[in-house]
Image (cartoon, rainbow, N blue to C red; front, top):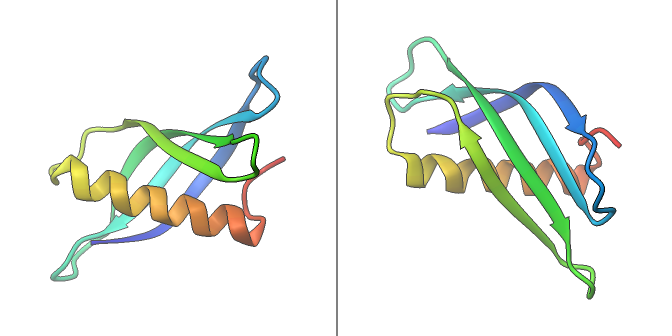
Length: 89
């Protein structure tokens, strides 16, 4: 399984300055090819006092795929997107 992209990323307002919440639609490509699947996702990127970042996937829409590997792949994709500066400010 591969995450192709997260479309329609929107940052949600939060009163906590070190916590950023986002929502969007993830395009998923399953092994074996075929048409990509789409699922709504919500996630949080939290900055620790020492500067490290924690990504938490809070919601994944209905997808016929095991959630644990899907959440791990989404978290890795979000970390890479954040490192590249691809998340909305």
